[in-house]
Amino acid sequence: MKSLFLTLLVVPLVACAATVEKDYGRALPEGAPALLPLDEDDRVPDVRSAFDDRDRVLVALRHSLDWIQRPHAPSRFPMAGIEHERVLRTLERLEAALVTAEDRDAFGDAVAEEFTWMKSAGWDGRGGGVLFTGYCTPILMGSLQASAEFRWPLYALPTDLMKDAEGVTLGRAEEGAVVGPYPDRATIEAGFLKGRGLELVWLRDPVDALLAHVNGSAVVRLPDGSEARFGYAGKNGQPYTSIGRELVADGHVAEDAISLLEIRRWAAANPALVPGMFERNASYVFFQPIDGNPHGSLDVPVSSERSLATDKSLFPPAAPVFVQSTLPAPRGTEMPFEQLMFDQDTGGAIRTAGRADLYLGVGPSAESRAGVTRQEGQLFYLFLREDRL
Image (spheres, rainbow, N blue to C red):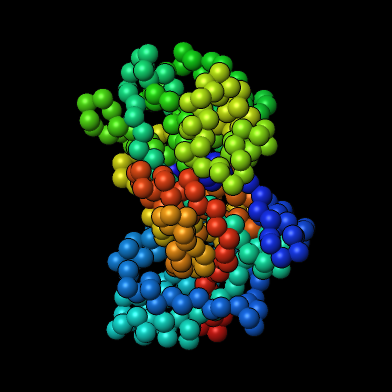
C-alpha cells in the first residue's frame, strides 16, 4: 500500500464562529514553516496510553526504525527543519523508554523530560488545526478470472510507466525516456492496458475497484473462499479528485449525508452515470500481490491506528506523531482519539499541512469507520530534545 489514499468523502468544513471557512486544502505560503512550537494554551499530549499498548506501538515504531536506517533515508532530510539524525535518535530513545519504563507514569515522565513537541502549521499556517480522514484495507469480492460477474480489473504496474528513485511517477516511457504523462483514468478504463496481461484480479463492482484505488490496497475474497492480498505498486501521476466532493457539487448527495454507503447507493441507482463520474478522478493506481499487511510510502508495513499519512514534502518521514481528535461512534456520537502514531505514509490528496489520514485497519469495520471519518483535531510531532542528542 505504498501510497494509501485519502477517503472519498472530503468536502469543505465551515467553522460556526464567525462563519470562517476552514480551507484544509490551503497550501502553506512559500517558505512558511510546516512545524511550529506549541502555544501556551496548547494541551500537551499525554502519551501514557502508548505504554498500555506498547507491544503494538513497538511494532509500528520498529517499522519506522527500519526505514530511517536504510541507506537512502538521509536523502529525505532535512525536512521541516528536522535532521535525519534527530529522527533516528528520537525513535531509538522512544523505543528504549517504552521497553525500560516500569509503568505508564514512568514512561510519561521520560517523554516529558527528554523530548519536545511541535505541531502542524495546520490549515491556516498558524497551528489552527488539521482535518483527519481515514483509510483502510477493504475486503472485496473478486476472481482471478474475468467473467460476467467479475468485470473490473486491478492492474499490475505497466512496464512503460517510469518512476524516479523515490517512487514518484515521471510519466510514460519509450526506450527508457519519458515521452509524456501517463494516461488518465478515462483512457485506461477505455482499454489502454488491454491485451498486455496486466490484470491481477477482477472485482464485481466499480465502486469496489474505486475503493481499492482510493485506499491503495485490498484483500480480495475469491470464489473458493480463499483470499488474495494486493498492495500499492505505483500510480499514473495524474491529479486526484474526490468523488464524494463531485457528487456533492452536482447535487447528487447532500453534503451532510456523504459517506461510502451513500456513494454505493448512488452508484446502484445510477449505473449509467458511474463511469463518467468516476473518470473525473484522473488518478489511477496499480497493484502488486503482497503477503501480510500492506506497505505505506516508506515501504514498511502500516499498522492499524498507529500509522499516519501526511504530505511528505512538508513533514519528516517516520517520525513519531500524536493525534488529538475524535472518531465517529454509533448513533451519531463521537469518541476521543488521542494516540501516539508514526508518520509512515502518503495520501493521494494529502497535500497540505491541514490534512492527515489515519490508517484504520483491514475489513468491514475499518471500512465503515474510514468511510465516515472526517474529524477536526491537532497533529503534534515528537522529537528528542537537542541537548539530548
